[in-house]
Image (cartoon, rainbow, N blue to C red; front, side, top):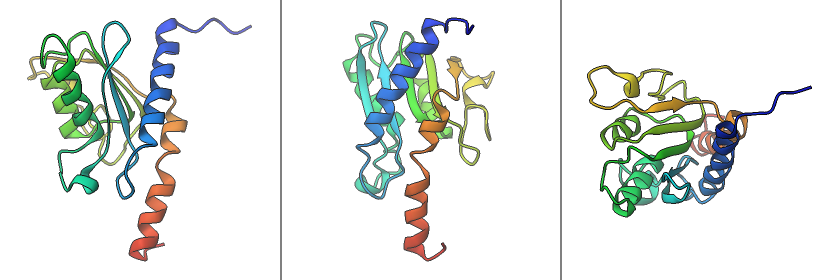
Length: 164
């Protein structure tokens, strides 16, 4: 008999499914990543998809867009201490740093990113002792479903460049 799963784990999975649905709206040419910032009441304060190519903006990562929206909507401006960032792919150095500087309370991510991940894969920006804020981090939530967003994108990129 399986033990009942903790409600937080189930909630994280529900939120990740929402982030996966958001990722479906990523413009062609951008890495399919979806992000949400969820407030303490469980409501979505901000969402985003990668738009670097679409907007010609190196800062237009899903997490940054979601955090900007949440900061504008949240009652305490950029202090998102009671909020959760949910993202389909482990945040990069820039996005992990943005979450730390916005004082996001929790980061929940899906797929690990062994080439750019900064929540434990290649770096651990969020747990750097010099930072004034350390969010809680939960990785690998619905990792397989989140990772499945990526292969067709990268396969198409290789075909475009002739490196298949």
